Image (cartoon, rainbow, N blue to C red; front, side):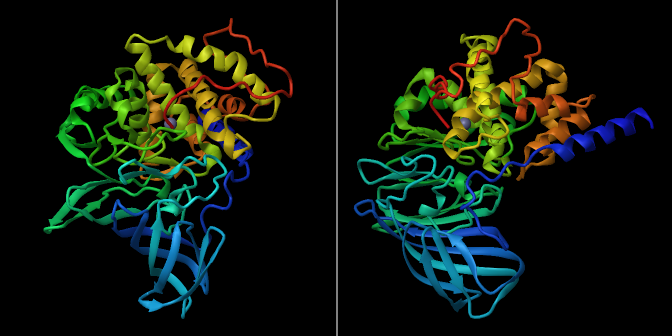
Length: 476
Ligand SMILES: [Zn+2]
């Protein structure tokens, strides 16, 4: 057996034993079809929480479906049509169950007339403060991650079902709409304005963004001629941060080694009541608390959400238990940004997580590749998932690390990846079988040694006790 075929056999053996933990949010998403495109129309009046809407969904069934389900829990449903014909339907908890006149197979279309209620309260398994982010003046933004997008519109709210989005949103004169993608049309009448936005790359519903506010749109140009468009309520206060956007993108392109993955990007400042997560990586239009964009110390949070455009957005996670592939990289790069701009070194940043958080979590069976509980996936994905990224960088060096992430981001762009996918890419381009190393980091019962830091010692806190809270970090 040649060396290369031995390596291939080892890689196969490793991938064969990579565990696939049970889905963390199994109620999200639906079997039997995938969505290709959402076309969403809303009539928004900020003086009421009710917005009539129509969702036109183009989907493809992978088998004959005499009945199918969408995720929806956002308000009343008026009418459902399938391939243009009225269909029977009923709401069952957070599902819209559709019973078409004729079974669907292959490509089909669903049109749902609904009324979204921005005051709807539906308990989340992860974050009850996510969902509609309502401002004091009736404006709003969306925080759909991870299980709230189906409060905004009927959808297949699965993290790995990516689709193209178009929005047509009518607002009273004086209000402005911001959404994912580019503004492709605006029609004004005496009393109202209709904005049409379209995305050039697909994304999962949880990364959808639609915001209505008294925004100023601030446009500009980023690296390689990238069109920039931000929406902020106070452009004077946000100016220092918006002025840095090209340099944030340039820094990320250099450190990640790849161009920005989408057709445009900008920052959204939302005047909302405090969310638990006050920033979110909604695709091409990450959202922030408006006040945060006026605070220079929030720059790493902006870098964090911009990093997610590569890690988490362009390459999504195939299941929520793979969240380290999103949050781990975002924390790694925002920490690297801080370290290069007067903040703590990476070693100082990661030592506490390595010595305390990670061993305590593993002692309870919670590992970066298997966070085990929905409420743990974000704190652990950030706190211990970023250690996996740091450990990999420490083991292989900067050049190989970049080769690995370049191959990974290229191979799965506009798609989704599992931890096993990442291990396969790392092993195939890393020049060595990284399977056992990553396997130990992602699933091992004890904290592995940290390459380059033999003096770091895992010291789990009280066995079986509560997980220590990771250092508080804004953003998501
Ligand atoms: Zn994040």
